[in-house]
Length: 182
Image (tube, rainbow, N blue to C red; front, top):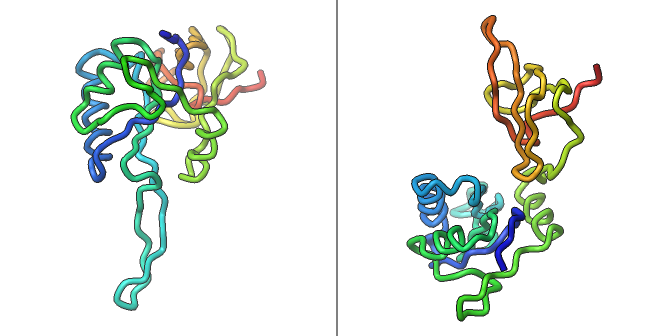
């Protein structure tokens, strides 16, 4: 069951190795040219208030110890790279015997992201080539530009903008832009 759709999956890791697995998987995806298949890797954490020795302080705690979330397109190669990352013991929802795992439901992902204080990623936006957009995040924030390419499958677009008196092309994700009424 090879999918072309970007979905969220849960990796099971050795307890205490979550951040190491995140780092390893991100670097493996980069070094093996899998950035178009393995996108975001998240260790769900939340801020918890603790009182220790009479002092109250806020600390980050793992929401799901032993688990890491990965947003990916489930291809054989991406699946192989993720499950063979050091510290990964397997995918949650995989029944063994080479079966691919079951992705999280969109509602589950939304709930986890909101709990972590993260915005839920935009999956689609109504822009076309030639439209003008305002960049709201990243290195080009507060600039406006003209859309020259839209890739709805990868949720990316290319925007041509003027910077330092020259035309520059920026590759952005949908979350980084807002539409502008001409």
